[in-house]
Image 1 (cartoon, rainbow, N blue to C red):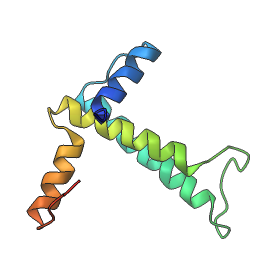
Image 2 (image 1 turned 90 degrees about the horizontal axis):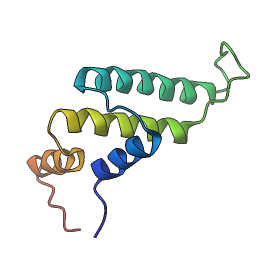
Image 3 (image 1 turned 180 degrees about the vertical axis):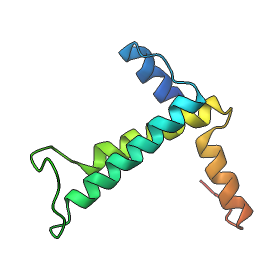
Length: 98
């Protein structure tokens, strides 16, 4: 049986000894992480000149941060993010066979 995304995030917070943010905090963290992802994307485009060019910017860890904070926000709203995605796809006619 595959672990639920929310279970993985909860285990991470417990492992790190972190307090789970409330919905408002999680949403604000999510927005800031999306900004960091955008910054990492821009930094990889040669035509852009960045402030702090020596700062490490990697897309993969920022995607992880966005996914984690979206999951925390969803959990605080009482929504399973994977179920929400599948329901949205279903509303467009897609049937998940997996």
